[in-house]
Image 1: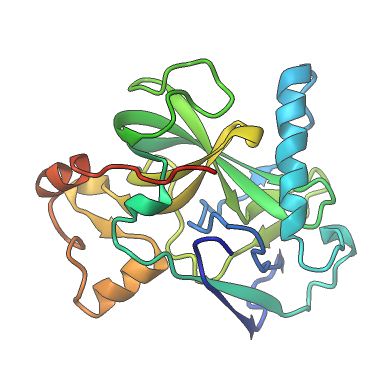
Image 2 (image 1 turned 120 degrees about the vertical axis):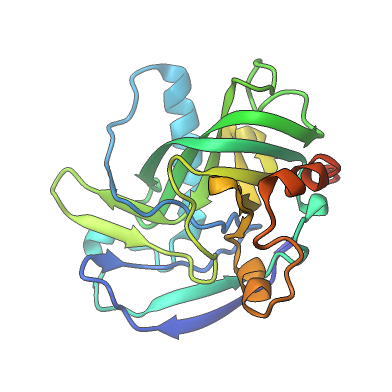
Length: 249
């Protein structure tokens, strides 16, 4: 793993629908996605979106834990959980883009081999704080207020056309992000997927800063967090001083 450490545990299955968690073997984008099931969508007819969809689906094949499709998997299998520890409360070094935005849309998908779930969150940009990327990944549109980008998460919840519901959680990824929620996002561009991965987020909803990442939640519980509970108005000057410093090789 390039910037996250992970520790695998076996945990009991506590869900009525089929629930599988995966070991994230790549760099991992573990900030938990919204977990309300979305309906499985058919592949787009337009060649360009179809190419993007195929690339994202194939990328998340790497997150399937046993090579089996959800339909073929025994729902009684224990989950393999991954605990991610990004480190700093404000990890500028893990981001090439730092923005404030709201989650405007959510859609879960199956990987190409149907063995893993990934979720796309559409982020309406409210403020660009810092970026090493002049444009969104694979897009000719300027990264600016009023535009939107897509972040991809490993995991999520999906309802197949058959009616079956599958849920895939990455344990240790903290509180799930919420559709309609406002967040400070630390992002890493994934140009081949025309998307971003989220290294960390902070909730700004309701005028108060709240931890959502697992390491920040631990700091909040231990009363060692600098930012937990701070007013957004006091936090914004801190956020606006951040500089994204991740440079892709």
